[in-house]
Length: 448
Image (cartoon, rainbow, N blue to C red; front, side, top):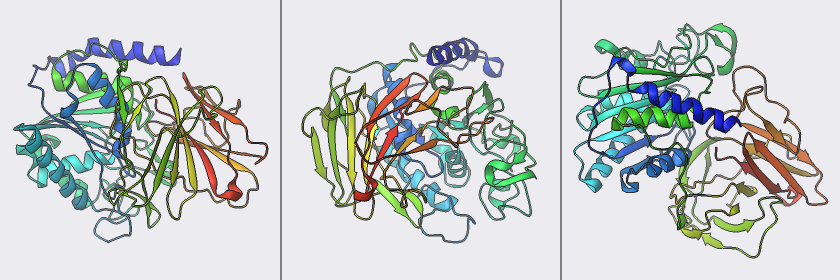
């Protein structure tokens, strides 16, 4: 029911978007689209957005999601920090990716779609990396375009501080946008944890940020507000897709659904952590084993359908999947727990089914039983907004109000091994428990 309601809202937005900014956008030739993920994230977060573009006839070969090697920003931008990147680091990698995509496709220009920190990367590339001549339009989703705080005392030197030299430079152009590039921002009405007047979501409770819920907007851009969405959903929700599709193509999407394919091939990367921060650098010598499982119980249905030990690039190579099948991905990498990842069926092919081993929480090591995590990479859990169940009960640790938590954890007995159901609105995934004492952990990874 909630999913249908969200699609209805998105359909209403489609009808309205022809008049965003007071005029309809003319259709442009189909250009390659480069999707840029946010802080600490991976290219894999764009999987449903890519599927929706494909389902509306956008050629797969024109849809490219960049995987930034060190996706987490430094605490202080100009001070090296293990496992983290400066604003210039990610700008240079984006420039390389755009150049490669243009060369491969023969396109004169590209479209850019970015979420959260990706907005900083895109704007820096356009203004300071020569990108304005290579890009026709940029869509910035939940971007921290004026920082998460404007302060001379807090987050000093961070690229997320609106008072930083970096952010002041990005916003120094008249109108805050660049001539020759069409800009759109997509923001929440009041549900974005990083666009709040109080700093509690950045660890500074009761400290005024100097910002409001409109902080992601840019003067001179087409600024769109999506009611009720959280920070990540500004880029990954169906309504966000409808908004960006209309802006980039000048046409209404024919569907918000993901249209299944007859033949499905899945591929991806396994990456880990460095200096406590996640990376998108592939792990060599990791093993991925894939099992088809019962969608009701998570129990394996036969032997492995795919098994691969990764080479230096960390890629686990494609396998032919069934569009209606639920899968368990077992990720084994040196120095990490054996991670059993349970996913919903994959209706379409994808090369960005990226996986990271689960890092155990501080309480997991002392537990004698099993731990089951439920993760929502493309959004947060909203108490009252969403139906959230883990093993038939609302999980603990999810605060009310602005959605701000994307992972929940359940501790259970090691024996007997049993099924744990995770549910988020209309998506339900069954997982099996595995003993922590044998260095195994279960993850329910939601897709929608």
